[in-house]
Image (cartoon, rainbow, N blue to C red; front, side):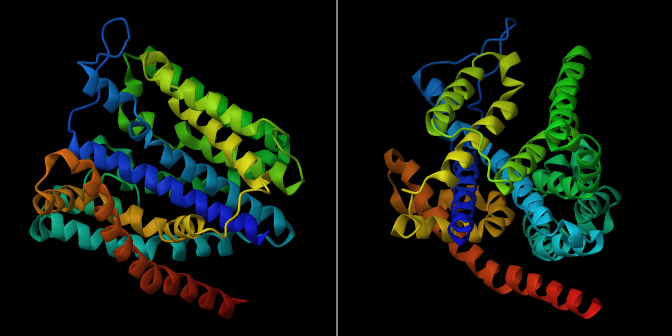
Length: 367
């Protein structure tokens, strides 16, 4: 089981690297995303545009999907192991101390270092923006969806997924986990279709990336946890080729806009297949230097997620100046990540871990 937990940290490392390189590409090549013509086919203007839109880095957003799948898997697996002693108060206490103290610290620092202290404290719009972020409700309006730190939208969804987890458990008790996952999947597809029907309303961030639209991703992780807990697998063999087929489908889906609306669904299937294969693979060792490095990245992935995006432009520009070679600009992603990793490791050690420990200490006193 310890080996499997190390593999999960390895996967967290993959997830944050995907997100990081995706955001780097956004910074280095602004406006690279191809638009869609009247026939729903992507417009590209030359080889550079094609490479940027269909390269692996262009699909780094899928790292968020992987994070949601892992979250659903771990949360529900923890429940299955201790379901007789499940306490909602303890559950939310663990989530609070794991999520909010590091988040609030990063929110204050980023908000005041990249914005304006006067604006957030003394203007009505700025204070509202900051308050909505404090309570992770900023994803309810398009105005605050990407403000302060564009990455924060997915954290708000994650918190909201925690809040509706008891409803998923209630559904599981009534109709079973498989049917519960199917229900969230159907809900997601219906919301997409409704969004398309109402004049492409599905492109509005607060709608297209709402907690109910993305609930199925988290539920897929929970459903897989149910299979894993009962010693079952999705595929006994051929999991890796099936994953690669899904990756191909994901790449093709970007070509046509109506397939692209279902990119999260394809990515979810791909990652579930990959995790299923990865946890079964006895020949994949976690003792190599590469694996240990990825595990270290995975351990502080939350801190990396919290702080990296607002400073990427300045960080990459700094290394541009040092290298003075535009031809190797892509290589500047490496030292930029090293800087972010070192800061995040310190945050993990001195903020994340003490926060979790304090929460545990307080819960132990209440028992």
